[in-house]
Length: 285
Ligand code: NAP
Image (cartoon, rainbow, N blue to C red):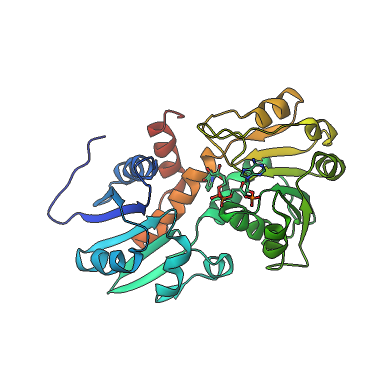
């Protein structure tokens, strides 16, 4: 992608270890271009343990902000001057904007997920939702759903991690085992299933051993898989074939980027335009 760089152009980037696989530069530069902003978005490898040094470097080098992926989301949080409430609740920041030498932390994963979920037209208040997995992405998804009044059951292979996560909003979340019997039982009254595990992701060995819980879902249920590579996981295929509403995680990825860009520029942007430009750059437009 060709980007215009002027003497006034402010820098943005994504940091991580590893980070070279990140789609954020493609997404953000497409949005920046579509919106005519004087910004450029780079890919910046930062070594594990060097997050604090990077913060100073970013400020000194005049960065307007950056996104953080593994393993920096948690370690950056205490280093922020201000943190948005949702990021504080998650214990993780994925977006840092730098203004007047101060660091402002946000987490756009949860809001990005909710924004994309709107396409299902579900009423989340009281909706029985089964979330698979209890890692970092699950935490953002579960807290976002709980904030909207959903009743969330968190099923995880390591039940202890699900129990820890549910302590963050015990009135809305219940921990459970990740077993096929349990999933089949819970599916009977679920309006939404969200896969936040890495099962089904390209390049990983893991696949769901048994997808029969999909058959137990009510006909009006929706299935959201955070994975977007492959575009259609086995879970989504089985759910689509059953006639359920389905989505992969590409929309969430793009929306969290749109919401991050709003933090970087310090105000609202033309969201639909930015979203469309990013999808087009990803070959999905
Ligand atoms: P993570 O913190 O490493 O969590 C991975 C989760 O998957 C854990 O709950 C883990 O269970 C579970 N898991 C892994 N292998 C499993 C197996 N064989 N059987 C059952 N459960 C298994 O990862 P993350 O950052 O939360 O990311 C999770 C997924 O979401 C990834 O595929 C990632 O690409 C995707 N994601 C998408 C977006 C988006 O914008 N669309 C954003 C963030 C993440 P244990 O706790 O038992 O290990």
